[in-house]
Image (cartoon, helix red, strand yellow):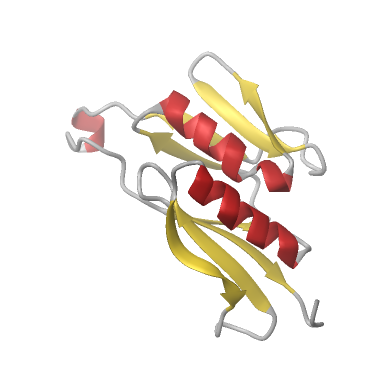
Length: 133
């Protein structure tokens, strides 16, 4: 079982604002620390946030690249409407559409939407259901 994920943001405060808006349908809230911001849902069983953001700083440890390398992160939800709400909120918060909400061919009942965040990370919210909603 995965405990948490941490990504680096080229602009931490802008990314926190984006994710708080995009993940609001999932009830995500922030927890601040001196060098990192944790985001998590109060409905989660975990005692700490499961999604962390840290400021990215170009330098030798990051191959002197100006921006962090994009990743794909998926969040599971139990209702298709939350997928729809995430997609709308993510676009309104400044993200770019990378796949409108719909059933995907990966498997029956795989209903997902994708939004690229401010650094180009592919953020997915998915509801997997064996019954039509």
